[in-house]
Image (cartoon, rainbow, N blue to C red; front, top):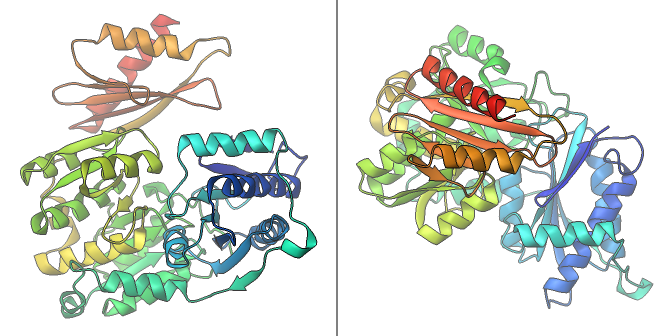
Length: 461
């Protein structure tokens, strides 16, 4: 059993003893702590919270527990049912709610679930707010309402349509161009909420034919739900067999988007954001943001159009904060997370699909040809486990000092930018581990860079 408490929410495996897994007791405790935080941080009398969930089999149970807790804390609930993370984020704003809870464990396996916590802007909480909620939970600091002040529940099941309609109205989404291209699109929705909303979106965009794979939203994931190449062999086969023009795959809560080329090869999850940014910047030049562990290709594309690229610490809340600070026109994360401020400040696979298809239609080219226009980089992802007693911060500090003549960024671990490559070293907050991300122009060079720094760390030990 696993229970991970972090500033961005609570996630864990279903079952087990309280405090060791995501049990009903834990769900109630953290929902109550979140409610207490709302009560102390907003002056609105009749507080409202939106709840959405992915299709996991534990979802209905967890939602019922959250609903009952919020009602007991005197908070009104708007339950939008099965909905993607970006849809729920947008619903918070549309409902003028004071917060939101998304019941999803994102790319984790089906026996996991989580409470992802939102503020009144439909955005993830700041580190300070998250810490306050964890403190309330640890101290059992929450007070339930009396019988005269209990909250209520409203059910609204139309938010997929609201989300899609907002996308269709964006200036840079061109339904006529997509319709004219007569695309045949294959999708893999890992039997979660994407199976409901992706076909709707693609039809609304004017796609000629949608080839569906794993679209039954029953929460029984047919493969590892993280949209990585090794998990997408069935989609690749479908694309080649049915001669589709493109394939899209999303994770269970539809905030990450991976693209598969017409020949069944991977477009590259890192390049989802690069391609969308390329399209946006051609029409609306400006600044961009991604996290420190994302490909350098976004920087290259941004500078090509005269904009400034900025890197943020890993985590959507950090990327959003940097985007607002730098007035970025597009941003996100290299895991396929596209954040388009004209719609909302959240990773959104649906708007990513609409913008990608528009660009592909306007370019009148294939996906593989589009990919060939971008700088070629390869990322290697590794980790090294350390003895329990090791001071990880001290190791990172020593590496920072040793390579101080290079371009160093230390807002999130240590990132060292060399002329033709980079390495990013981050410590885990839950395990004695240093994660090592490296990027170079070839796969072998990226791996060699990672091995070099694993050696450096072992030498310091």
